[in-house]
Amino acid sequence: MDTTQRTDQQRSADRRRRELLEAADRVVLRDGPHASMNAIAAEAGITKPILYRHFGDKGGLYAALAKRHTDALLDSLRAALDAPADRRERVEATLDTYLTAIELRPQVYRFLMHPAEGSQPGDQGFDVGKHSAPLLRRMGEELAQVIEDRLDLGPGGQQLARVWGHGIVGMMHAAGDWWLGERPCSRAELVRSLADLLWGRLAAAGDRVGGPGF
Amino acid sequence: MDTTQRTDQQRSADRRRRELLEAADRVVLRDGPHASMNAIAAEAGITKPILYRHFGDKGGLYAALAKRHTDALLDSLRAALDAPADRRERVEATLDTYLTAIELRPQVYRFLMHPAEGSQPGDQGFDVGKHSAPLLRRMGEELAQVIEDRLDLGPGGQQLARVWGHGIVGMMHAAGDWWLGERPCSRAELVRSLADLLWGRLAAAGDRVGGPGF
DNA sequence: ACGTGCATGTTACTTGCGGTAACACCATCC
DNA sequence: GGATGGTGTTACCGCAAGTAACATGCACGT
Image 1 (cartoon, chains in turn red, orange, green, brown):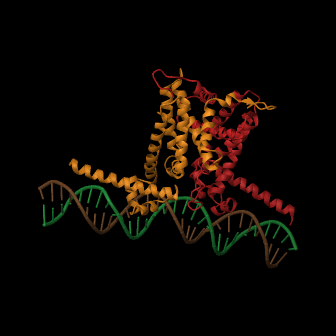
Image 2 (cartoon, chains in turn cyan, yellow, green, purple):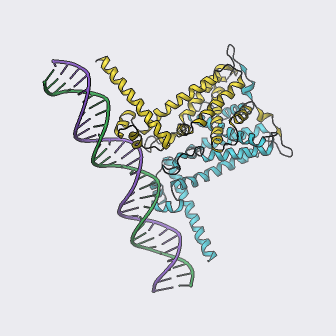
Image 3 (cartoon, chains in turn brown, cyan, purple, red):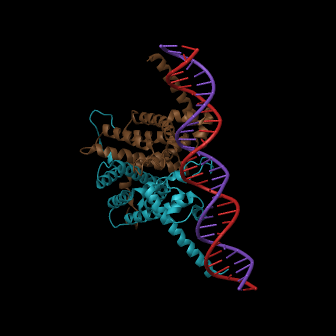
């Protein structure tokens, strides 16, 4: 088997795949996650079966598309997480990076959080637990690793780090989602409020007069 | 217009609607959120158009279905939130209530977190912000209200409470989703870890030796 | 008693999408 | 020159959402 030829072919196929992904990206960003395979194929200047040859099925295409954006976002987050500053500043920088990303490209964000597209009626009866957006899971795992690596949490620290990783990511996501919809405050205020929450201000707050305390 | 007759009709329609919802519930719990309208109609012993007359479209049926479960879960959560105990115990009780609910009825949980079913290609271009599960939003708002009512957060407290409400709910949700899929620890441990996070243990933890600190 | 509404039910259809089979073109390699 | 393999097409299947048109039964007003 001719290595050069095979490499050439693979190179060509990879380039084509990237072109198709970029076309799909344009359509998804324009039409939303409901973009049909026909529409994507049309945007790419081809027809459906080619898409299916490259990506298997719609889930495959969407997974490939999601991976691109997820990787990019995770790179940004890693940079914020690795910035030279103290812990609080890093946490705020990470929150701000995430929120800035979803603020600048809400369509991408919406697409990434919609896992329902991939699954089909007949795939697997009812696997609970896999339906959350892969982006959330990956962010949770990454953050868990960072926490475990850098913090001394004593015995059971690894498990604690994983819980916290997923929990913090979920907090960031839900708050960001709500904020994006209602825009009740500036991004900086949101970041500060969330960091305050993580810094234990909930436990430290005083009871309201006359109330039984939360 | 005859009031008695109208009431009778309405009563009958309501009863029918409830029967249909219960049939839909059975199917969705059996087949997952991909249950077709035909399947639901068959389970109810009727045919599709009747479902459409009652609920408009699939989104309407699913919304009605979701409302039932969401209301039920919110009632449980309110009870936990109102229990006579100190703040930490209430937080743990609320977390535990939520986690117990999703543990006992994972199918219901999965259904509630799948908003993608409702939206259709042609409804509205791209409204970002409305795509999160209504359950999450409602839980966030409720918790925000409780926090605002019972905690003295100083100026800007209302906004802070809302951020925290949505953030905490998101934390609970993401951690619960991950936990449900991997079952890395007992429910009690998860509750404790999350409460520790909310109690500021992240900020209090020491740096690991040799690391720059999270 | 009888037609008039009106809700309830049906069959049969349209539309649109995911996915596939079968065939056509064009380069490359023996 | 003819096999091979990737790229592309048209035309189709199956299935689910949603709708139109028609049938039936029950309470009402006169």
